[in-house]
Image: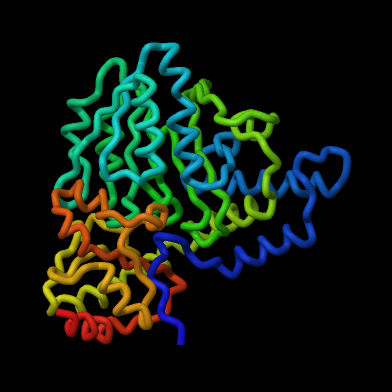
Length: 377
């Protein structure tokens, strides 16, 4: 029997309804949405426009504020690097972010540092939350962009977006959030219109890998002055050239629509799994990373002092599939930069494991898992 899959923060399974849409547009409605001269192209265009509406509705944006990309990594790069020319033109070369961001945010910001931009890196507290008072102090007249994630991919800790939006109210700096782990799951915070840019990943909300979106909210009638990172066509308002993968886009749209409709039911199932996990692990006195009332219901990051995470993953591999950090950096494992940013040592970071599930996850024998862990000590 296969182990139970508990790595949904890395990638989720396809929702059955999403799979049906994907296969339909792969095998039946396979036209290019840029083809204006025949019905196949027309129907493909209609599917793409419907998907824009479906994605936009999640965050209460407008259809023309949604740009389709290959995923949140590309969206993050477009949001950050795409503002560089505007920063140079205006002299606003100051950026603000945090040390708990995904590498897809940290590395583009580091690239801009090498080009003469200044980045203020905010610290998090020991619970993995950004210190909003530091943001208030860090904002300057020449601040171009603030980039703070909605929910952390390793710990599941939600960042205080409402307070962040309040602090930035009235400031001209753009606000970007990497919402890969929160889009379609933590609905209300992303509907705050002070958030200018929202990065979305399809394979975190039960859509296929290889598709995502960047929501680019207008300020009144003004569009955010992003520049494309690649050139070669006028697709996606000239910001993201290339033939749109209609099947992937339509699947993302369906996933977004279902996520809102089923949100309450999904949260209930995920919360039930978490409560059972915490109860089963409690006798082992784990170190839990993140205050649970501030953490997404589908994620649990914890450590069992004295047990290395790699050894634990191997010992449990016949029972569950879990990880010890971001899948995007797992090819060369180093202690989690997120856990270290929360104030833990290298050794403590090396003990951290991440369990993440979803509404499609079956019941887990948490007690059996706890018993196996108990005998590793």
